[in-house]
Structures are given as structure tokens and as C-alpha cells.
Length: 293
Image: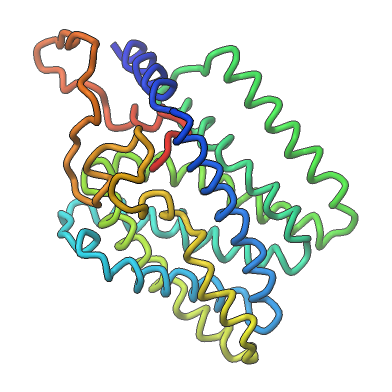
């Protein structure tokens, strides 16, 4: 039954990618990649912890203005959300800011682009199912590309450390994206993201205070940090109603928890054994690289 669920998840993942979805995915890649340029500008005057804290705090304050993001979340979900905030935002954002002190912006962005590869790898481990042959070839080529990008940049110890820090952030993203998918499916993407940001901001507050003591003021750095949340992790699921990829459930479009499919399924309902609860929440992570995931 687990294998059948994984196959169904893969079929759904292929079915939802319409041309509009690919266009929005490309837009997400541009905003995500642009964040590394803003980090580089921020480092001209601000210490790395201050940049990481600033982008999270400003993003959380902006997201809190959306009523759907303030919907209640059960207390039982808070431990997972807290862990998500650390490995999705607090630690990776700090690692990326520190790493860009030693490596170029372009290298950091390209190495960090391996996050989807780690997401797919972690997802396969969670569902205990190997990817298809075509997906496996894609993963191997992707990792070889990361190595090819990283090697020319590793000339000294500091450069190597910078690349390793970015790779560590990408690995954390791989785990975080697989945890975020079922959490956002149960409690809504906006409420989960807002609370994860709150946890991350609180965790970085002491380091940000110390970083502020070592920083100087500069308008260019301030504007860059203010612009950073626009390229953050939740940019895909903060699009206006009706502008979401067709793969996003209706609940994800307005930040609520409704799980209404966009179109009725043509597939007859699968039989369930007595006592079965259907597809495990972990299997949602098998829908690799679906928008809003």
C-alpha cells in the first residue's frame, strides 16, 4: 500500500505542472537567487547574525499583517514548528550570511541550489522508496553539478569552509521542506510559516544583539535586509488568491487549512483496509518540488 501511495504521489506531481506553474517556479528561482545579492549588500555594514535576524523579523512582521496567518495552531504542533523554525530559517540563514564573507554571491547561490536535490533524497529516505531511474539520473547529475561548481572555488581554507556552510544549509533545507509539507497541509501554510519565523527570530535574538555591536549603519545594507524577506521561503505561498500553481490546495491559496482539490479526481477512490488511515503525512513529502511545498 505504501508503494501504491508513492506512485500516486508521483503521478500527481507530474500532473499538476502546467505551463503557468513552470513560469511561477522560474519566478521563485529568481527571487530566491536574488536573496544572495541582498545578503552580499547587507554584509557591507552589518554582521551576519544581524542580517539573518533582520530578514526573519521583517518577514514575520509583514506576514503577521495577513489575517489568515494569525489563525490559531494547536499546541501539539508547536514542537514540530519550533524545530522547523530552527532548521528552515534560523540556522540556514545564519550559515548563508557567514559563508558569503568568504565565497562569491554566485557560488553561494549555485551551491545552495542543491537544496531540491537534498529534499528529494530525504523524501526518498522518509518514504523508504527509491526514485525512478530518470529521477535517479537527475539526482546524480545534479550532485555532480554541485561538485563541478564548488571545486574551482575551493582554493583556500576559508573558501572551503564557506562552501561547506552553504552545503550544510542546503541539507537543512532538505529536511525542513519535508517537514514543512505535512505541517502546512494540516495547519495551513501561512500560520505555520509565521510561527516558524517567530521561533527563528527569538533564537537569533542574542546573536543579533552581539552582531549589532560589531556593525555600522549603512543605507544600502538596510535596504538590502528589508528587501530580503521578499525572496524568502514562503514567497510561493504568499501569492494572491487565484495566482497559485494548480498544485497548491485551495487551503494553501488563502492560508487556511481547507484541503479542497482544484479539480475532481478522475481516479476511482482506492479501497482501504479496515483500520487504515490512508496516505501517511510523510508521503506528502514524496511530491518532490511541487509548488507551495
